Image (cartoon, rainbow, N blue to C red; front, side, top):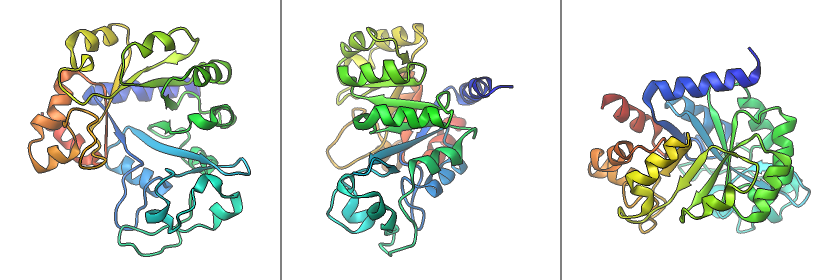
Length: 279
């Protein structure tokens, strides 16, 4: 069996298992397991995740690491934007863990993470990397992992041009607040896997049966974010992780499943998997 056939089999197994794929937001972290690290991704797989979501930054020297910029003060104890650092500076950084204790865990390189999970029973969403897509896609191709990767972006013309040129076979999800953006994406020769949809209210077109069924007729996946980022941001009209855990799972995760969304991103993959399997 070649690598592409292996990846297709994995995707079929995931869909046959539950009909819903679970994406782990920055892996699964806590205590001495730190977000956006190999440890967090291994933990996510143990918690039942199908997709590992990770963020990519580039140093001023052109090397790639896994980190969500803006999180520097809490995670590595500096106010400096990690994207303005040299490779040596990033390699010398050490994390604070969930108890705010400094530990020896370094910021993981993109190459190390890709190679570690190559051929594993999971898909990988390389998120927040569109600033550097030409080099990121070349790295993905260098590792021979185009069939295991999902790329996301806000579907700017420049991003789509680079994707069509460098990685037309890589699965792609535009991040949508407006369905009209899909028309722009379809003008490019890219592998449109589906779309990540964001909506603040239940009357949004992304919640309509017509839109969801139309995407499914076109054999496209719909990704929604159950993650709770803060007290005010709504990515799925309030049907999120916090409301599931603290109020009613049926009204939160169950609402998303019943609507027919195909991929749910969460910070609590085991709880979500257990809930879905128990339905």
